[in-house]
Amino acid sequence: MKNVILAMSGGIDSSVALYLLKKEGFNVRGVTMQNGSMSEKEIKDAQLVARQNGVEWELVDIEKEFKKEIEKYFIETYAIGMTPNPCAVCNRKIKFGLLIEMMRRKYGDVYYATGHYARIVKIQGNYFFSQATDLKKDQSYFLSTVKKEYLPKIIFPLADLTKEEVRKIAEQKNIRTAKKPDSQEICFIPEDDYRKYLLDHGVQTKRGNFVFVDGTVMGTHDGTCNYTIGQRKGLGISYSEKLFVKEIKVGSNEVILDVHQNMYHTGLIADRLNMFINMREIGEISQKMLKCKVRSNSKPVNVKIKLIKDKLEVLFEEKQFAVSPGQLCVIYCDEKVVLSGRIVAAVEKTEKE
RNA sequence: UGGGGCGUAGCCAAGUUGGUAAGGCAUCGGAAUUUGGAUCCGACAUUCGGGAGUUCGAGUCUCUCCGCCUCAG
Image (cartoon, rainbow, N blue to C red; front, side):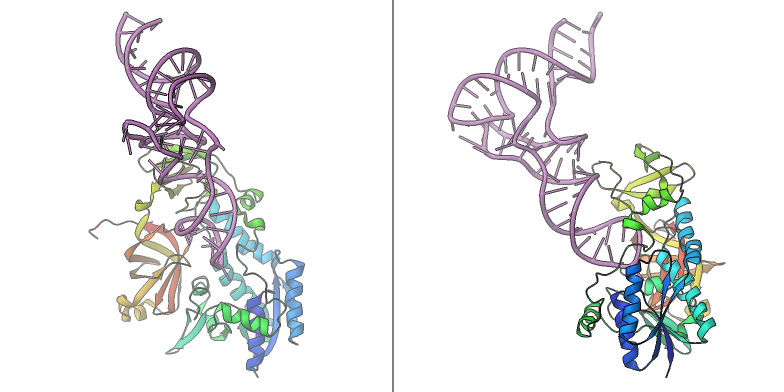
């Protein structure tokens, strides 16, 4: 019987995952991490679900590491004018990093499962994340940062299920968390108000100018960290057309605005690459097969990619809206994630090369 | 002080021969969403600078007052 550690949040997904793993005959042990933001109630839920299924369960305190790796990253990224992706970093550093290591230290080389909607596939000895059956819930984008070495031991029990099916199972099996709403928002940010969070954590905000691309001052903003590329809401500027944040200049404390049609980019540069196969192998794949997602809920677009030193250059077949530095660029081949990187710059090329 | 122009929601702005207030932007609410952002749907002037008058009926016509812009000295 295989031993598997299941990360449990107390929500419906990990609860159903537990049921499925048991059904498959795994010897399951539950673990819930306290990152400083889990409520007593959520922890209790996780514990009770574990008990309901007769599995051992433990709580591990990772608050200190979480604050250091995720919250600090979040704050610092905004401070330098980029847009962080805390969930993606958490997956790499915490959920599929620190936590796995802690469990391995205690229980040896066990399997590790979570309630994510994604798949792991093995092709010619290589493991890949792949899109879930339920494309609406697919989380491969957020998982693309996870170190390759962990994949052989990861199990996603929900890979082939839709959210509806998961809910149905939860109801049928009388899982106590069945009717919980989907979680969303950033787990460590109260009230979903990240601007307030940044203020409370000492991010300096200086008022500055909203500047139209042609140089016209359009109004006053209250700190560059309150904005992100592509943002439209909350600018408070009435103009003949909708205006979007085109660029954030921390140095001059300016937020550059532009109209919708000028918000598209032809490509991007990414660093901090996480490769699931090497570039040579990618080269063997026809470039025609490669697609890219620049945000979690966008349709993949065909791309051409090129490695330049340790950075990746990506050129889109169709222009993409508001490519935002700090966010993730994930390259897919079919449904598989072949590599991902952190966007450092958007590229705008004119017609000719 | 004379001549001309203008004054419609937070902003911009339609409004025809008087017939019962377009649209855009912003804002707010909801949907969606393991980041941020986008997106979608919905709501947003009993009232047209104030007052009086003509009319069955006025943002649209008349008078008057107020405010602003502009051209003359």
